[in-house]
Length: 151
Image (cartoon, rainbow, N blue to C red; front, side):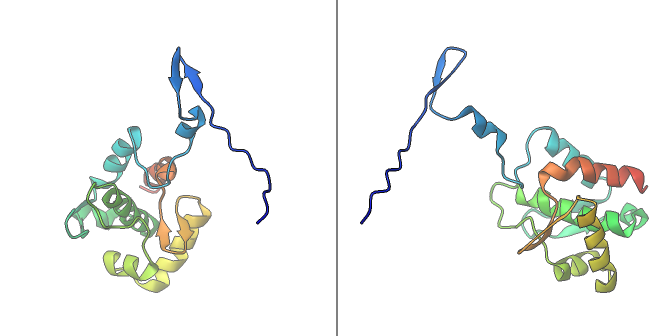
């Protein structure tokens, strides 16, 4: 076995005279699905006029106003609901959804869903990962603009 001489240093930082064990830069790094503070309010503001959710089953129940949305807005709304469901403390719901899940939930045809999802990815509102499509919390401001500009 070779010793490659790696040294790991733990730093202690001072903030306002108090010793800190954690790196102050740690507060800069958040998980994409972590929704805090103002982001929670924005998420609720975007969803509330158009849908509600069952926290136990994960079902999204659309309101009559959902029909007034464009296709891109409907897809974004469903993915915002997934984000909201993923924030529940005892949730088993994931933030990402496959195109088939989105088709079933929105009752939109696959030939419509996939191209519009691609547009939302291009618009940098939605991200595509191995699990499917999602709107990370860091993109909530972009999602908010989508609902403002396409109304």
